[in-house]
Image (cartoon, rainbow, N blue to C red; front, side, top):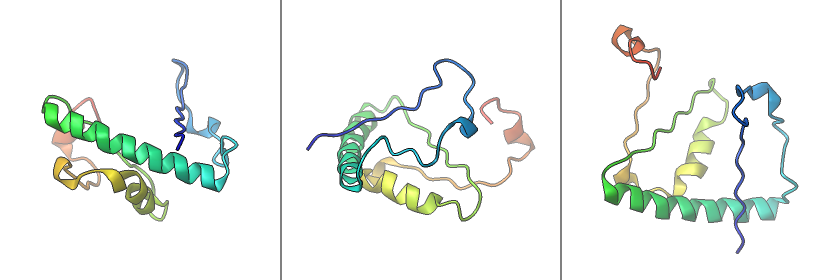
Length: 105
């Protein structure tokens, strides 16, 4: 099975979500897209095992969308190959005053 990897790059320029076509399919058929997803999920599983075993680094994934935007199904698909023992999930709302003081928010 051949996996397809796609990267959206802004080429060092400021990224604008409005410049991304939500209907873009990369000329993949539904079957090809499913094959790519399965291959990428397997890659995620392997990479998570290596990352977790090293104990030195972590990956932060933030889903910030409005209600009913499909984040539950997206998380379900993307994280389906991830070992839950190597994950920490935190749901949050508006940042409090202490959190606003951190530059990563």
